[in-house]
Length: 127
Image 1 (cartoon, rainbow, N blue to C red):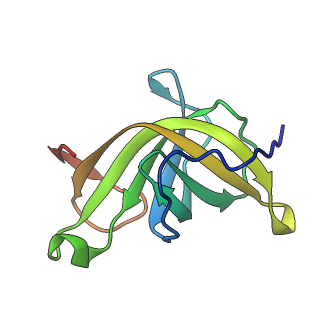
Image 2 (tube, rainbow, N blue to C red):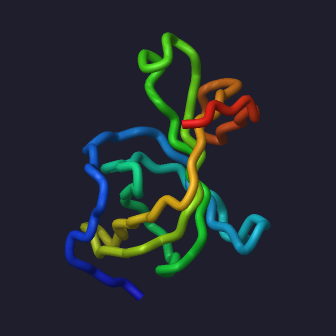
């Protein structure tokens, strides 16, 4: 089901395009649906938005790993790992879907290397 809602954001959003891996979850385990590689269209403290060709549903739990630019952390590879759920789906051009995710939790992590099958070490920095 594709839904569209009025702008209900509670946090300022930033129109930034960061590489991101999004993995659907079922409870505490990974979903049989594959992870996808996207670029964010906007990010805020409370959520993110990206466009993809997916058949996910509103309410689907997801984990997102957003790779941050090297210059932000002095050349060290860092990312934000966040968990949340799909809050809205918006039809986009060419049969693609805009996906709005509400972030429930997030933490900064260190990446072993830059790749979009991102392997993260659990050296975490708390916000």
